[in-house]
Length: 192
Image 1 (spheres, rainbow, N blue to C red):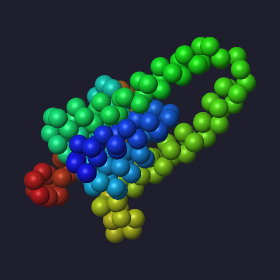
Image 2: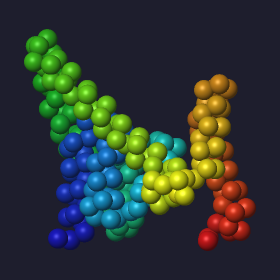
Image 3: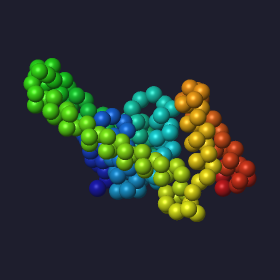
Image 4: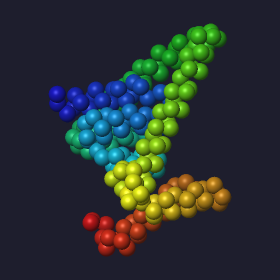
């Protein structure tokens, strides 16, 4: 199967089953792009997630564009983005029609209430994956693989966000700068 077809099928699935928004789509993106097709590493996915938080647009769409570009350049980015958006456009149009017409019916409310726990579980899985990729080298859970500076940066950022109510974009920028400084100090260069 050509890579373009793989991008289309993968991002159609992601777009089709991303109930709950961007955070809920993250396990699906990890499954398709990291685990199944090996288009990007988990570490690269974590970087993608960070960039997606700093740029406008939903995570799934930013992710599809980034991954499509990484796999097949600009045409890959276009194909992956359209494949990711297409199911949502169709489903939202149909659901909006049904919701407006039948919103007083109990079964509609029941369906929506049953979807909520699944969304929470998908977000939790995403959080655990990002936690492992951020705090352990090569995503290996071992004491020798702990990235202590990442844990220190995490707690400093948490304090800056919660206690001092700093702008999240500024905190993310400072965290990125601290990683660059740490890498240069410990390795002597960003390229090693």
